[in-house]
Amino acid sequence: MTIAEKILARHCGEKSVAPGTFIEAKVDIALGNDVTAPLAIEEFKKAGGSKVFDPDRVVLVPDHFTPNKDIKSAEQCQILRNFAREQGLRHYYEVGKAGIEHALLPEEGVVVPGDLVVGADSHTCTYGALGAFACGVGSTDLAFAMLTGKCWFRVPETVKFVYKGKLNKWVSGKDLILYTIGDIGVDGALYKVMEFTGPVIGRLSMADRLTMCNMAVEAGAKSGIIEPDNETIEYIEARAERPYEIIRPEKGTRYAKVIEYDCSKIEPQVAFPPLPSNTRPISGVGEIYIDQAVIGSCTNGRIEDLRISAQVLKERKVHSRVRLIIIPATQKVYREALREGLLETFIDAGGVVSAPTCGPCLGAHMGVLAEGEKAIATTNRNFTGRMGHPKAEIYLSNPAIAAASAIAGKITSPESL
Amino acid sequence: MEIKAKAYKFGDNINTDDIIPARYLNTYDPKELARHCMEGVDEEFVRKLGRPSVTGHCIVAGKNFGCGSSREQAPLAIKAAGISCVIAESFARIFYRNAINIGLPILESKRASERIDSGDEILIDLSKGRITNLSQNENYKVQAFPEFIQEIIRAGGLMNYAKEKLKK
Image (cartoon, rainbow over the protein chains, first blue to last red):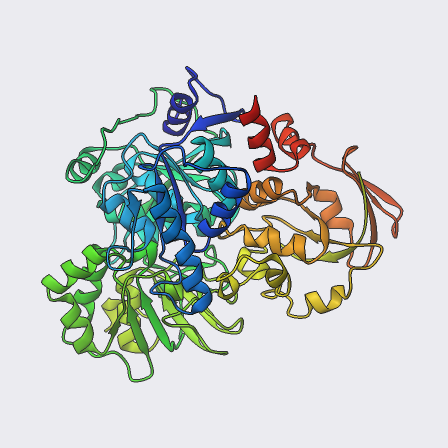
């Protein structure tokens, strides 16, 4: 069995499970946010729910429209807050403690290796980087999980991606996943698990691994997953709030497909609108002038992302036609960036630093685009209208490219500055 | 159960930002969501539907319908706008779950997705799994739902299914 199959089997009390089978499995964590949880809470109550299955395992993070952007979103957050208090939820994160959910939960050790996690947010697949099986579901699924502690699954097939060779300069986990999505398409892994492996993955930081698994959903996947190694154990030992279990694939496991990449041929990638699969190497981008650069999100808002951005921005100025918005993903990332002097670098360069929020990634607030504007962003989706006006354009990249582009006023590599 | 509907055709990879842009997600009131249904891809869509007519409406799309976010507001907006069914070559997996869970009929059929044109009159027999194109006089086969999913549909959505199970 693959890692995903083993985790699913353990959580439904079977010795083994095969792809295609429908199972009802116990979940370790059920997650919701200010967009998806209000509906789940209503469904929970309508179904006669009085107590959640376990107040330690239902996690609510108001992060999309927070700090509350208007009255309606304030009311949505209020629903979460009241429910969290009434249910005595251990993991409710108020503004001031909160951050973007998929950066926050690994950082706080809420998700651990071997877990089965469902989250009413499509980027829940991020936690696969810890060796957990995690997938996005909807609000009704979340209501069902809060009530019963379970969720239904169709056991997915697993596709194995092997990354070999040496990483080129400025190439990160973001570029590997963009390149992969560019290769297989936005439905290239529909209903499947993407298992990332190979020598290059072994050398990646946890931040880069989280970025890769985060965007598995952009290829239609149910989850991304990476076999835990020493890097994972070191990361998790420092924060796990529960005992964990390292699950490895069985020897001789059969995969639906195995795809290999030679990373020495991969340049920094830019995904052109309107799909994350619309990728080009940085050398083939041409002249794309930008109005805004966004560095942040559940994909690239971790301290490592801010460090590389600061490295590029240090002693340079943001182009006069560009607005640079930097969003540390969590309060801890914010504090660490402050301690390391990164925030000073950003402000000196002419960037603005926001409180942790999903904000502009989904065109909610904190950097919405006007008609005809172009933005480069370290976020995960460049769909039409995603960051504001339907006639605005979004280009996806890694943080170094976004920072360099903010300086140059057009999409460019730090090498060309 | 039979559904008679007029088809509205869309392409591949219609994402949840097309179906209901995120700026409207500060509410989950179906009536308000319905006003912006498909606005990201066709601003005139809701106006085109007009008042729900006797024939009803259905969306016909290509591959990977509903890709992107997990927002259940997407199938809710479609359902509340008076769309009685979505036919596509394939669905993104969270949208697929959400539609089943809230009781919005969805059907997978490559041929129907290719052949049906905007404006065609469609007759859908959900129990037999058959789509008839009355305008073109053709029938299309539909991928049958797995038994487990049929149980959820029979119960009238996931929460009703949960209630039934809790009673047992």
